Amino acid sequence: MRYPAHTRRPIFWGTVALVLALLPFLGVPTPEGLRQIYADPTYRVGTGFALTVLVAFQWAYVVLRRRPGTDLKALLVQHLWIGAAAPILLMIHALSSGYGYQAALVWVFLANCVLGLLSPRIPGRQLRGLERLWLPLHIAGSISVVALIAIHVVVVTRYH
Image 1 (cartoon, one colour):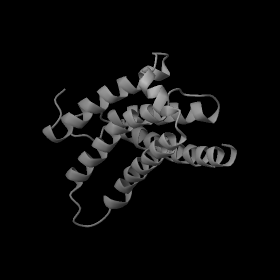
Image 2 (cartoon, rainbow, N blue to C red; image 1 turned 90 degrees about the vertical axis):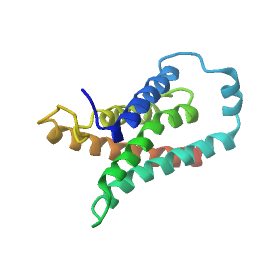
Image 3 (cartoon, helix red, strand yellow; image 1 turned 135 degrees about the horizontal axis):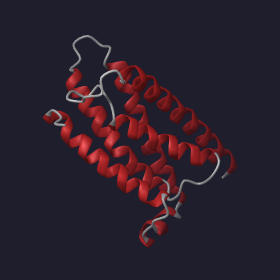
Image 4 (spheres, rainbow, N blue to C red; image 1 turned 90 degrees about the horizontal axis):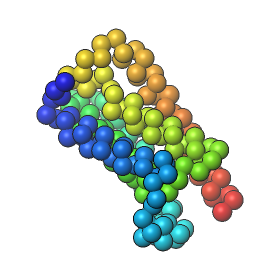
């Protein structure tokens, strides 16, 4: 299947980022340098904040696409590029999936990235009929990610 030029790069790099981001969560050893940096609490707060801002920018797509005169093509490409960066930023922020709600956050986040890559809204996709299922799943995943991030922020700031 051939995608339009404006979606090819973010789809390709998003897939590469997703595969790379899955490695630490599947037990591939983390480089020692990253482990040392991760020990610094400021690093974790900074990368967590960056990840939260990235998720907020993704939600901006919902609001901005409704505005008259919006270049929907450019907005979609921006949404795809931000989504492509998301798994790498998650990998940089979290060295493992943890347990409990943290594991849920990681896996729901990554599953939603996969859903984003499978979007039937990208021109050239031959996934007719799946949009009715895909969009509610992607929105539910996005809402779940926001809720789990909120829980994570409360737990981390309260108990650390």
